[in-house]
Image (cartoon, rainbow, N blue to C red; front, side):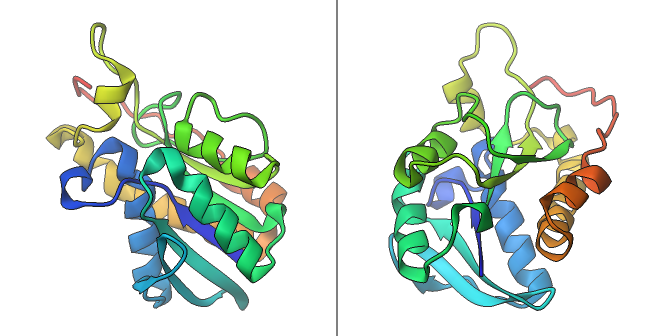
Length: 196
C-alpha cells in the first residue's frame, strides 16, 4: 500500500496559494483516479482506492502545514505503511514555477511541512514530488510569499505542472522511484514574465 499526501493549509483563505499546490495536485489526482478524498480521519481528509493496481491512501492533512507530520505519522501507523511507500507532494522555493521534480530522501530544505513529516516518522527516506514556486523578490519574506496566491501569469503553467505531478505519482507507483526519476526529472525551461 502507498500513502500519497498532498501538503497544504486547510480553509478557503489558503486556496490556490503557493504553499497549497500539494492540495491542488491531490485534488487533481483524486479526480483522475476516481478516488474521493472526503473521509475525515486522523486530522486529515482521506480516500482509498487503487492506482496502477496498487492500493493507495490519498490524504490532505487538516492540521496546517507545520504539523503535517502528525497526520502522516497517524496514517502510517494505522495502515502499517513503510516509510519508502510514502509519497509527499509539496511546493519548493528552489525551483522555478512549472518545474516538477521527484526526490527520494534527504533533508527538508527549509520546508516546515516536510520537516514535520521527517520528525514524526523519524526517517527521511520517503518520496517527495516537488513543484517549483520560484523565489520572492528582494524585501519579501518566504513566509508571506508562500501564503500568497499565484499571480495570473503563473497560472498559465501551474495547471500543466499539476498534471505532470500527477503523472509523477503514477510513475513512482507503477515503475518505482528510480525509473520515475529517470523519466520525469527533466527541467522545464520556460521564461515567465512574472513578478513573484
